[in-house]
Length: 52
Image 1 (cartoon, rainbow, N blue to C red):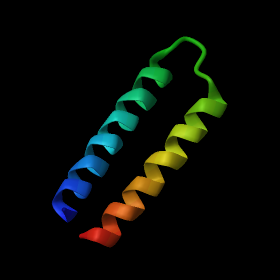
Image 2: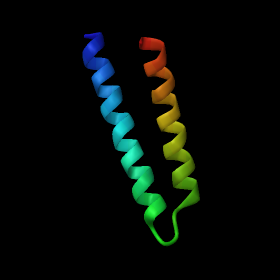
Image 3: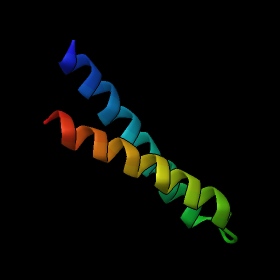
Image 4: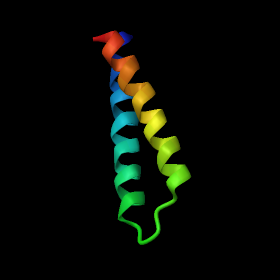
Protein backbone atom coordinates (compact mmCIF):
# COMPACT_ATOMS: atom_id res chain seq x y z
CA UNK A 1 0.00 0.00 0.00
CA UNK A 2 2.82 2.41 0.79
CA UNK A 3 4.13 2.08 -2.77
CA UNK A 4 0.69 3.00 -4.12
CA UNK A 5 0.58 6.04 -1.85
CA UNK A 6 4.08 7.10 -2.95
CA UNK A 7 3.11 6.69 -6.60
CA UNK A 8 -0.02 8.78 -6.06
CA UNK A 9 2.02 11.52 -4.38
CA UNK A 10 4.58 11.48 -7.19
CA UNK A 11 1.78 11.79 -9.75
CA UNK A 12 0.26 14.72 -7.86
CA UNK A 13 3.69 16.35 -7.57
CA UNK A 14 4.27 16.03 -11.33
CA UNK A 15 0.81 17.41 -12.06
CA UNK A 16 1.43 20.42 -9.86
CA UNK A 17 4.79 21.00 -11.54
CA UNK A 18 3.06 20.97 -14.92
CA UNK A 19 0.35 23.39 -13.73
CA UNK A 20 3.00 25.73 -12.30
CA UNK A 21 4.91 25.69 -15.60
CA UNK A 22 1.72 26.34 -17.56
CA UNK A 23 0.74 29.24 -15.32
CA UNK A 24 4.22 30.79 -15.50
CA UNK A 25 4.12 30.59 -19.31
CA UNK A 26 0.98 32.74 -19.45
CA UNK A 27 1.42 36.43 -20.34
CA UNK A 28 0.04 37.51 -16.94
CA UNK A 29 0.45 34.65 -14.44
CA UNK A 30 -1.78 34.59 -11.37
CA UNK A 31 0.71 35.11 -8.55
CA UNK A 32 -1.70 33.96 -5.83
CA UNK A 33 -2.45 30.75 -7.71
CA UNK A 34 1.26 30.12 -8.24
CA UNK A 35 1.93 30.53 -4.52
CA UNK A 36 -0.88 28.11 -3.69
CA UNK A 37 0.35 25.52 -6.18
CA UNK A 38 3.93 25.82 -4.97
CA UNK A 39 2.84 25.37 -1.33
CA UNK A 40 0.88 22.24 -2.23
CA UNK A 41 3.85 20.91 -4.21
CA UNK A 42 6.19 21.54 -1.26
CA UNK A 43 3.86 19.72 1.16
CA UNK A 44 3.81 16.71 -1.16
CA UNK A 45 7.60 16.83 -1.53
CA UNK A 46 7.99 16.88 2.26
CA UNK A 47 5.62 13.94 2.67
CA UNK A 48 7.53 11.98 0.02
CA UNK A 49 10.80 12.68 1.84
CA UNK A 50 9.32 11.26 5.05
CA UNK A 51 8.17 8.10 3.28
CA UNK A 52 11.50 7.36 1.56
